Length: 341
Image 1 (cartoon, one colour):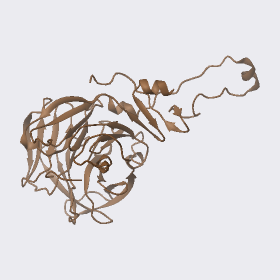
Image 2 (cartoon, one colour; image 1 turned 90 degrees about the vertical axis):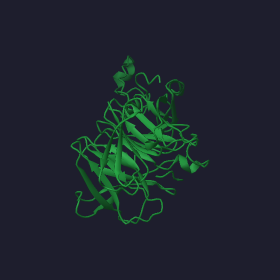
Image 3 (cartoon, helix red, strand yellow; image 1 turned 120 degrees about the horizontal axis):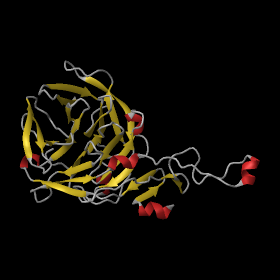
Image 4 (cartoon, one colour; image 1 turned 120 degrees about the vertical axis):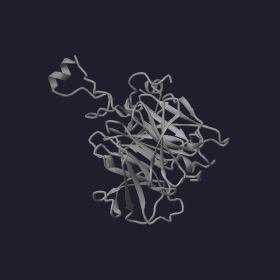
């Protein structure tokens, strides 16, 4: 079994699995309007991106598949620190104005830009003090979830405790914790392993059945089979290394399940690269259970079942005392103001 997993490019550890599919460069972002690219979303034909800077108004850049900006969507609201971008099932673009490095904000905000161009501003308050957050997930029901960037302990997940209100701040409630361990993947703005566990972006698959969180160096894919995002984020994810990104903060899914990632510009200040992992969403799907047919007549006559090859009742093959493995199905691809964490 371990030899098979090695061939499939899967590294098995207790309670989780690490997939190592190809990460392919798609195109270079060279436009200075995205020098501090922090959020990314996709509708399949276009990409949407936000810059981590304050120009006095909200700006969402529309990119073609060559990374060229073709249009700028503007809103009259003046954000404080936009850190992520999400595309909801109804076509609304949600900008997460949730950055707070100095822990000074009394409220954070979500800017909702509808396809008709109208904009709604929703202010939010945490129940337990101030947090810096750079990841936004919109679940299948359209409910926003904010994931914090914690330097100590687990990342915290919050969602509105009531319906969003444009007239007054909406209280948030904590619904989950996300435990991310240190990895050896290279990248990030500092030569310190702490950057490998700071959550810097989030994305949901088009069908809402896979959630992705990223750090400066890795992506983590969580299956959401029943729509319960909070519960899913406390389960064991599949880790996909994204090595070599100087300050990786953006992540998105194409509708076909391809995972996209991008960084702020590198140290030379000239460009960054959008990269893709084809078929990434399928990495969280367990293989179908296998049916074992026995011809052992004495065993059948005695009524005793044949010994299972893996843990009974589970669709996941089990290796080494409960470690979970995934089987990779199909061909993978041929592939803030710049801040310290």
